[in-house]
Length: 244
Ligand code: NAD
Picture (tube, rainbow, N blue to C red):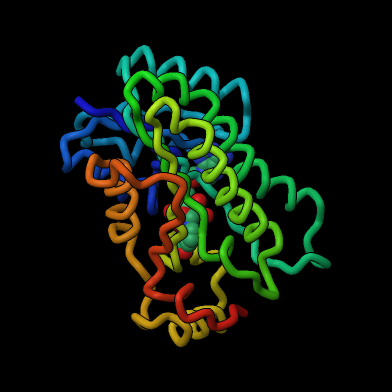
């Protein structure tokens, strides 16, 4: 049975991705640092193995990778989805916030990939990193968030270059806005209106729509796709209207 490791799996896009993998017959290691949310999310799901882990802490990531190997014995896909957001301009962003965003959004992808790649090499598996349209386009806000996501896009290309030799693919999904807890915390009414106006499909995406793109990139259907950034964004990036 194919196995996926999904970080930030306790809610939002990570939980929808977990559910879609399960529907397609995969097993899932659900990784999150929020213990009550992880327990709730995993309850009632078959073929999952929840692991409490903060992806920004090296020791916890190493222990998580060892537990995945012990529980499942193989990994076919890694989805680096755990993320945090902060929407402020450079002059208003304190260093602690900058570090907190980088720690999860960038260090977390680096550490988790490094820990899981040996298992992916054995299966010629796939990595999908979750960036954002904020990593594709600059704005007057979100200096830390956008910079972290732009770095994730480059890290993805680096992974594709390094891992092709082992048949391991690495791609990136850049979602547009989705009404999750993360977005509800940072999307002001002005941002919501601007998104609706700037997105050709005139709406937010759903968790499931992002999950479908992720699971496709992990599947055999994407066997010749690597090093790419797929914007699942209702056409936002194609049109290129400025973000508030
Ligand atoms: P969410 O807040 O609903 O879920 C994020 C999950 O990640 C939570 O369960 C949280 O506990 C977990 N998490 C956060 N930091 C962690 C850490 N250090 N270690 C382990 N787990 C951690 O958010 P979401 O909207 O589902 O976001 C998922 C991903 O999609 C993020 O990378 C986010 O940046 C990206 N994204 C979201 C949107 C959007 O509009 N929702 C748009 C573009 C990109």
